[in-house]
Image: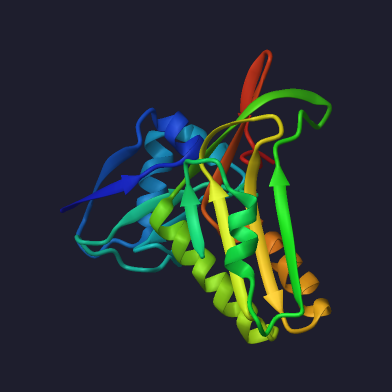
Length: 81
Length: 136
């Protein structure tokens, strides 16, 4: 198992109640597994219009396999400008 | 000049940073905080940013704009933190040899920034608050 730290912003920070959270997944898990784990623990995440994941400051495909040193963040719909 | 800041954005210094002797035009977009949205009265905005990724994405946008248009300089500065009505939230300034490119590139930069740069805006009303675009 590997523990991943996930940074949270915007509405995901409000839903989870913290600016980061930890997710424990089997080794070689992908982005999709991380998202599903979080949606199970925090069902309100499923109500967001879209939920992307950034890995090392880049939007990641759901199939990207995570590694321990990755910098991971949840990206709810952006609304800058 | 590309930056996220928690300080007041100085517009003249943005224009100055965009100026170039090769430029015949400087186009500037200034995004400000308005007092209403969807018929609700807005009291203030709170911007949150994923700084490292936001700067990286804004740099990528600047590079993409340079591939599409003949551009001298690009300035993108976005505020974070608490802003009140009338405050400047974002400034984009683009200088180009000819004016058409500066208009087009400036519009493309703000439109694309709003789609891809990890910045979030919470509107605070008299009776509540809402993260914009979060729900369908």
